[in-house]
Length: 478
Ligand code: GLC
Image (cartoon, protein in one colour):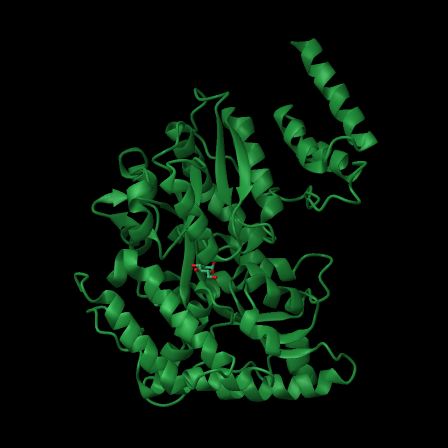
């Protein structure tokens, strides 16, 4: 046994240095051999192929605050499962690698970490293809808007994880429950937020904006001032591509302007109204003024890359941006403020932050469901949610974690905006539209993108949204 271990270790060291083994292979083999995170990090840094290989270098400090929960099963040691988590651009990658390694140490279960598609829309399509073939991974992260879509492919987690489920927010557990089955355990929640550069607001004598009109003015002032020295500078970046993220942005614009929820809780299709139309037209006005023309093709990473390079005054994005902005190498560390998104004007104007978030699901087609469930139990435990909030500013789905002093110390906005995160955020109409939600959202973001590119007026798009959504819903139970 010992001989085999040394043999494998020598092969690993030689292959790593010579470059005959890729960084990915080194990572795999080193974790299979049970090497420590710092050893693995050292190996990967000295890898012979490092220059040509794009695998991100693991951060040896990632996962440092993880406390492994008590009571994990150890009788499934030797089982291998795979989990689709995060995406290739996700700055949380090293944390997740570390979390997986610690799970392996505690349980003997090896988890292959597969990154999913960046766009939620593409990701759902790829999951559906895998499930259509009754194949794929054992565990998947699923979007808060998908329970109705994924239910038939998911293991009911209630019989085994009821105790854990009862610690999570009731509203999310209810959202994830389809016909009495818990199809996904809440993992983290999300809310659209406004991040701003405190140094630049101060430089131009501005306050954090509370209305879209103030934001437009502040973004223009800062952009005008900064462009001379930095032609790549932008006032405001967000997500305008033809995909789910645009539905999140659009819902914020219209709800904040008193423009309703696209489809109301009683099934009424309300999107074609003057306040929603005004909100769409206002967003069109940002394109090529305070926002780059390319914003109509941006997803989260595109806007984030501009922001993290120090090239934007404001960004609309999810809470992960906070921790990612505090990375030691970030040029904007210490210069970032967070607030809810601005209000519109007119009747019913309010703050509106779209509710997002991800759950972990075990596939019905998995041959290792028990190990999958154990992994979900670990990842969604209070311990892991605390570490995820502290190190990566991911919002917990367990109320008590919001009050942990180490969370407040790392991400002051988490307890400060607790009300937004615990019920105040605006849900997309996925509960009322169920499995039809992706189709309804696709109508909405496709039309809205046309407004942003100038191909259509807000009024024409809203009329099209209304008629197409009504048509799609006709024949359903609504
Ligand atoms: C975030 C949210 C998710 C949303 C997606 C859209 O990942 O958590 O709910 O669908 O963004 O891009």
